[in-house]
Amino acid sequence: KEKTKLAAKAESAHKLREINQQLNSEITERKQIEEKLFRYACIVSSSSDMMAILDVNFVYLAINKAYLAAFGMTKDQVVGHTVSQVFGQEFFETIIKPNAERCLKGDEVFYENWFQFPVHGSRFMSISYSAYISPDGDIRGFVVNGRDITERKQAEEENEQLQAQLRQIQKMDAIGTLAGGIAHDFNNILAALTGYAELVKDDIPKGTVAFQNQEEVLIAADRATKLVKQILTFSRKQEADLVPVQINTIVKEALKMLRSSLPTTIEFRQEINCNSSIMADETQIHQVLLNLGTNAAHAMTEHGGVLEISLVDVNVDSDIITSERNLQPGSYVKLTVKDTGCGMSEEVQQRIFEPFYTTKEVGKGTGMGLSVVHGIVEYHGGLITVNNKLEEGTTFNIFFPCIEGIEIIETEDSDGAVGQGEQILFVDDEKSLVDMTTQMLQRIGYEVIGKTNSIEALEVFQADPDKFDLVITDQDMPKMTGVELAKELMSIRPDIPIILCTGYSENIDSEKIKAMGIKELIIKPISKEEISKIIREILDKKGVTV
Image 1 (cartoon, rainbow, N blue to C red):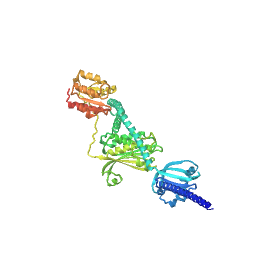
Image 2 (cartoon, helix red, strand yellow):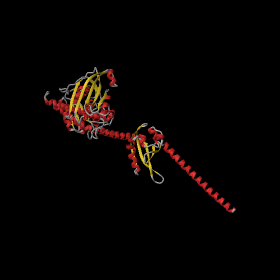
Image 3 (cartoon, rainbow, N blue to C red):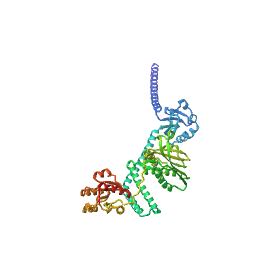
Image 4 (cartoon, helix red, strand yellow):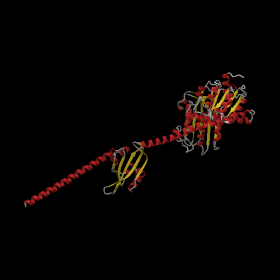
């Protein structure tokens, strides 16, 4: 019996030890689980992502600090309450319920959108919904995770804008390259057009309709010439020359062109009541008015309207300075372009002068028009302002400072021959230019030998160097350029005056050619009056007599 009792005690002690070991193991495992849960809780709690667990009845079971901070709430205000109780029925129906129902059916839910938070304001969020599954595999609810990706979104948008601007800049560079490439040929065409038009004009009696029509042709050709120069100036980022001009003349000329391009649904009104002068580049002022007028017409395309353009003298005093910032007291001309179109939203108005910004459809606008206008106005020392009402129209006011004490002298065409029979050798690979210039120079009193080949011209000169009083040569010619020809001619006769002509060249300028001994650089096209003046000045300095 004693042995039996001892055996029973031993067995009980063994079982007790096993129970203790099992309990210790379970306690250890529980502590490990609790420790893991604590670590997970710390990670979730300290995460910058907004996290929340909800059951199938949309009751908050748990929530982290980031979620509470975004809405400015405490844990007690959220946990244990339904979504509609915490945030209202509308938030529940529109934001939580549709996505949660998809998630509870087993779908993956992920989307990105802007949200307005009471604490953080408007933020762009990446939202995901995932099912909350129990150890036995049942769906007990869902987990909502929200990550703030506002900075990334803004960076992406900025990158897209930069890429778009880069593409536009590349287009502008291409335009600049193209402008330089075609300028030579285009200016040759304009030179022939201008020259022959002047010859025809000389043969038409003054005061006739034909004479007036021919003058209009020359005005249009001159405008085209200045436009090419303006494109080259813009593409090469050169500063334009500001000279004294009467702005009313420029505005009237631009309005003729603008009026002819307006649809019949737009009523055109103008008031030109200004005789003041400003320092300006005529082509740029012309461009300002055409850009603003075209934009105004575009705003009235659908329903028509009224376009009003006025030019008046104004005196800026302290009262105007208050409303028109950055203007110093003094005399100004005020150019106003007003339309009754669709107007602009406040957001659009804030950005209209930004480069590459446009509200027009693709292919109908580059976003450069108003930014160029703004740049031109600032370059001229002026100010541009905008008054706008949505669905009522837009008014642009531009103030240009007047100049005083500068007399603008109107030059008259010279009808008399200024040549004295001097011999000129004219060289150009364009036959039409040779024929036209030969006629023009002969009409103003010079003897001319025209050549379309630089090698032939050199041979003619070599045969009798003293025969010629002046040489005019084109620069871009096959076999031998104008500069190369000039060097050969001056090696034969160092004192021979040479004028170099070019439609466009970025490799030569006045300083370079004068350093070589060439007297003058002429950019085509050039009028009869201008070339006759240059020739006369060079020959008079040389002291040529016949």
